[in-house]
Length: 422
Image 1 (cartoon, rainbow, N blue to C red):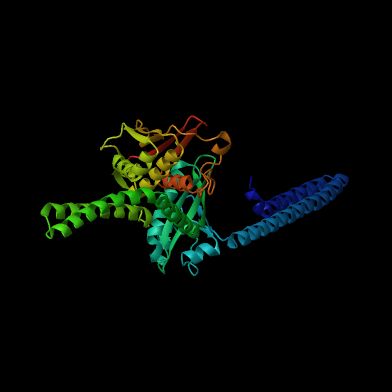
Image 2: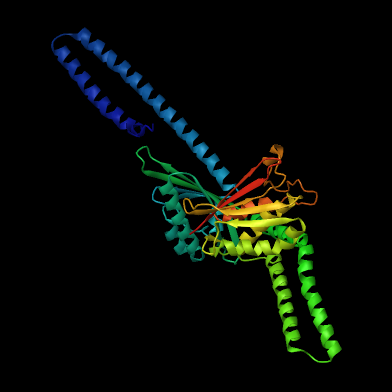
């Protein structure tokens, strides 16, 4: 407990000192008037000793308080030095969202080096740094949500710097409360993960290219068929010396088919802008099945889709979700060397999320490998990179979803994905 009364100790001492001296002098005067000089001398002596004792105690308390203040100042200086040398954004706010203290990195990040920021809210600071007004407004919203939730929050926040560079931060917010539940303070720590996000994008692209390579045999087969038809019709035209209308239409149709296949291939290999919208999950699944259909046929594998109709909608990025289900279905195909059925089932919607289950009849995953599934570069495949499930998990997390994997060696694997519906 803070002893705020200590700062009033000298005044308290002065007051009681005057009262004590006045009383003792009065008693001594009364005693002398009644010829009790011995008692008067005794009280006078006692007054002196008590004065020395109280003065000594006062000096001790003052020195102790001074030492405590010095120690506190030293600790504050050490903390300030530590915060200012951190490579992260650190900010302390009071219960009303006013900035109390931030580090040099934070001031530099928001161009507030020459601004008296203490006691100002995010919106008030946005006036001094207009380029970050939108970021400050978003920050106030997330602050309010953290207060409302009453627990530590963690999320990624992105914004553009004055020079146009896009920055992404991993932001942790810690709300502090008084004993009666009132807001006390908010601590915000933000770590720059822009380089990490760029690396993740490169890994996603690399995984997509890997999938394209693995699917190349099936894609080559799909392209070869229309090319054979085109060649045959061209030869017929060459032999007849004239172009038959039906033959020309067939050639054009086959060329369109090749164009569709190449376009689908580019969707996988080309970087895509992420856009979360309501999409038909059936459309995504049909696209993926068509893409791996040739490989599945070669391996004597069939597909079963249950409880998923055209009106089964989820909120997500279509291209990202295609990548997710390509990874999952290819894993299932590779786990079923003797053929079988891959069952894709839609489960009942709960808590605003639709669950999609992908179940195979493959060799399953050993218990020794289950704990490592999804870790970067862990794979049991001879030619695998170990990034497929890692990227799948990351995409699902970015969609505010969940992924669960259940497997037993020899009894297949079931992967359940929960995706928001709004």
